[in-house]
Amino acid sequence: MAKMSWAVGTQCVAKGDHRKLKPGELAYNKGDILTIVDTSTKKGYYQAKHNTTGEEGLINSTNVREREALRVDPGLSLMPWFHGKISGPEAVCKLQPSEDGLFLVRESIRHPGDYVLCVSVSGEVIHYRVIYQDSKLTIDNTQYFYNLIDMIEFYSKNKGSIATTLLKPKQKQGAKSAELELSKNGWLMDITKLILGETIGEGEFGAVYEGEYMGQRVAVKIIKCDVTAQAFLQETTVMTKLQHKNLVRLLGVILHKGLHIVTELMTKGNLVNFLRTRGRSVVNSVQLLHFALDVCEGMEYLESKKLVHRDLAARNVLVSDDKVAKVSDFGLTKVDSKVSDNAKLPVKWTAPEGLKKEKFSTKSDVWSYGVLLWEIFSYGRQPYPKMSLQEVKEKVEQGYRMEAPEDCPPGVYSLMRICWEQEPRKRPAFHKLREKLEREMAKISPSPGSQHGDGIRSGC
Image (cartoon, rainbow, N blue to C red; front, top):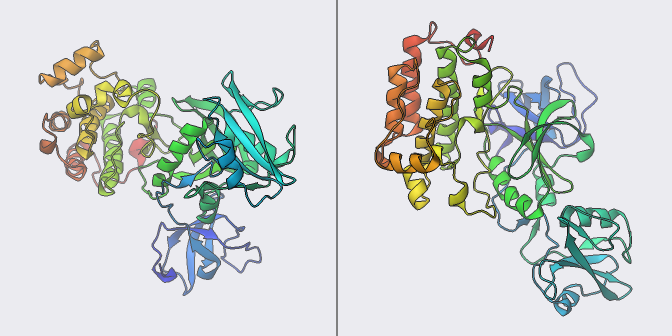
């Protein structure tokens, strides 16, 4: 892409340090991420905002390169040195010509469930059995590791009880180093610049922490299981392609003892808790409509990218400091876990075709959005109150639909009902839902032309 065609909102990576400033110029270091905020400045320059410090100033277009989205590549690997189930003699062949510190990891054929670290040293290959016990890995019963990534990181810096430090990974054919690709495209962050704070959430796949990265408050999801981390890596590459004001923004990735996914911090927490802890006396119906519109616009953007969320619910919508609702976990919902998909489906939010045939589409997301609207206008109540999951499945299939929440505007309830059409093709697209919501907003808002984030949001 030609530099002069960069649009407002484009993210760039600094090619080098810029400290000798002329008036109006922005200071930055090599690798810093900057966002274009104005393209109409003097020729060859952009007005840009520093993603970490928040400062704005001029940047020379020749000093930055565009931050590229990662290609979704099945060969992209957090463990390019892992060769799967191969025999000892095969490993020896792969580590030729011999070179001190050349290594690979394989799955043990003789001891299923265990691994073997194969290291070339002094012209021969030594095989170290990696034992899996008490949910950790060890070679010598002295050093214990959460996963293979953690182990390789340790022995690359410390000789420990093996013959040599690990110097050079032997990559599996077709595998590409995630570290190199993330670094090349400006998405790899530095663990030494991260200060971790308190836990703010505990998910199925790992804990979420509040943190600070080079002065910016962030949220950090840490995934320690290497298999799960590898699956999340594929979904994280999807997140690098998405930029929208109503999607939680990916800031970057840290590879350290697993996978750290770093996103903007949403200080007000998830939408369910936000509504439950404030209630009707604090949050008015205009604010509720703003939240509904925020989510709808985020989903309209995903719809335009032909991406399906599959787990849209108020618990997966986060609220920013200035009361803007943003959809989260949009890239991470298709990660396989040991439980079959059907067993962990969020029944109360899942469309009938999702429950019966595991068919998911934008139209099944629209069904979920209808349930989310019900959550918003009931101030965070659990959908289908007092009904068991089995009852919900059976009754919804027979045509049962929830009644309108108390004081819900009739126009909003009619939107919920069209989201809950039994036939997916009869449900509206998100852009149609947005138009209808905007008409609802015009009916009840004292200032229909007001932007999100105006005074209506204050005091929540």
